[in-house]
Length: 182
Image (cartoon, rainbow, N blue to C red):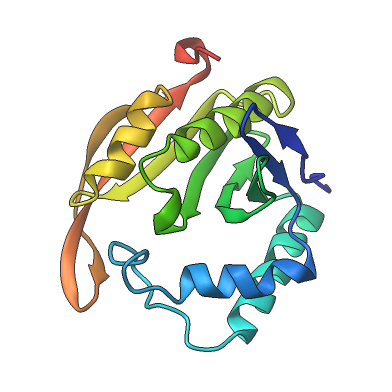
């Protein structure tokens, strides 16, 4: 089952399918050790990783397992990150939310704005009942994004990941349709 990648608009952002032209800014984003300091994968060292990521986004949509969108600022068209739903399960009406933003975009509310737009699409178009997200317990900013988007912290996955050689815990957040406030 194919899942068409949406094009969504907010006052300040445009969420759209990735194109091959996104490889350079995507590589810059994911090669930053500062941006990825709480991720369980190391920064990218080769541009081909960005090209594979974009191909994986297309495959994900073609296979119907999720949708990832590139995010541009409306004001200047600049690429600032991405947001996506993965592990989409139409039978259980569930999916997982993930996102990554350039550090220059941090603190401006872009992640919350993008997450809300994608969640609106998820609940309205995909008829989801539950969206889940996880974040490293040291990443307070990401936890705030999820809480502002309406998620509730449901628990802690102890020693869930190894980040930069250090064992770390993850918080699990959930958002149910009945609690969603667009």
